[in-house]
Length: 355
Image 1: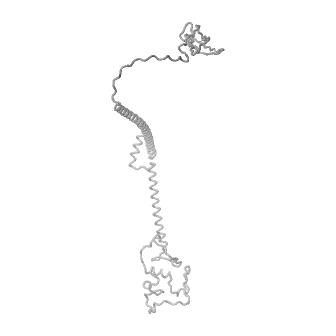
Image 2: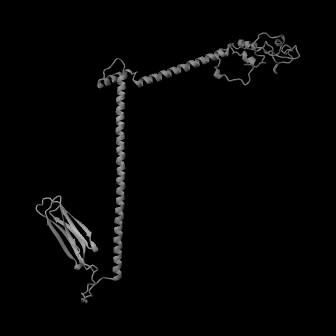
Image 3: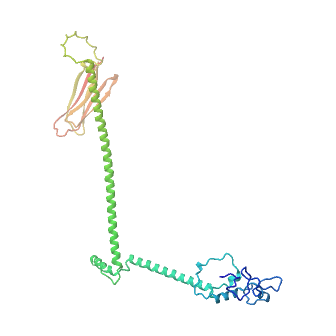
């Protein structure tokens, strides 16, 4: 938009003087106000102006807009709202009657731009929704291309499933379920194989560890034996070098005189006597038979044991009588297996003289 005080664009209007104007030209001099205080009425709602307002030296914005519309008859479309930058300062009078160069209201054109943008956004959303819907139908098997109809027929024929109507959802769904089951079975087998492999690796590692430990122990033992042999050889060599070679063995010397006899032992075992007492009886399952060994004066029973021939069992008992005299008895009872006739009950004991 041109400046307010330009004479070239607006020759027939009241204007404010500029440095380019000729001061001597009487026709171009500015008008003097009739009142000592000049003012401009800013009543945009009312179209009527007072006499003082009409004689004021500043231009009417509506007249400026009309002159601009007449002089600039351009066909360039106005910019959209997003291309217009806001003013730094706003005037209510100018903003109330702002028009474009062709005299049309810019709010209508901006509304048309907004309408076109809304249409494009709506169309894009509809296309996106349609694409998503087609993708879902293809995944579910409700929308099958013509090239895949033969595949579905072959699957139905191989599975023995009769085709009902024109819907291909049931066979495709069953086929997908079968594929999923097969994949799950394969995954289970893979997990088992991996688990078995881990177990084998663990066992191999344990075996390797044990073998390594055994090898280390064997190596240490061998090394210890080698060191011992080396030490022995070194020691023997040193002794041989220090002592010299050993000569042949000499003749046996004369026999010495016999020694004194030793003292007798504390128990005098050589004087002990072995004795046995026995009793012959008829064995039975309910009765028993005893045989006794009595300790005599000056003798001591140091050991006693029982045995039987024909009875099932024999038991040893010791009874201490008056004056410290001990008595041993063997009780035999029962009938031995595969034995006939009378049975014998024995008591074996050893007596030693008292010291």
